[in-house]
Length: 155
Image 1 (spheres, rainbow, N blue to C red):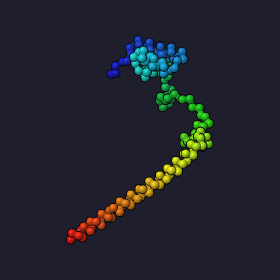
Image 2: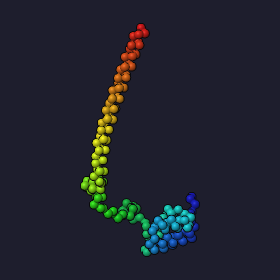
Image 3: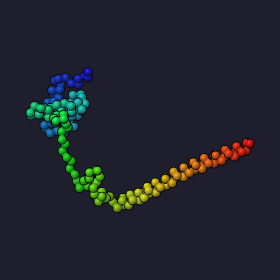
Image 4: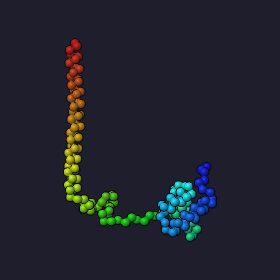
């Protein structure tokens, strides 16, 4: 069994200070770090205790919602979208104009040149591969002819 990190009194004191500081409106990450160093535990341990804090109804404030099928994560607030970040169903930006408007004309020109050079590079690589294959075939044919000549010379 794992060693308990805090005694019962320390746990109660930690929860009390945690609740007090969070209600005061302090930033949660700062509170977790401060209390973690004070009680000589990690911020993750303090976060664990913060999830067990009781709300006004006596139930844990950060518990998980119950559903028909079991325990479910709490719903998240939807993110706000700006005009430039609107996406279609596939996660792609829906407006090409919105993307292009963020770049200077020189940058777009360089990107187009790079695209053309990349296509050229691909064709050169394909050509190189086909030449290598052809060269291997020629080397095999030359080696075969060489063996035939040696065989003829020996006899």
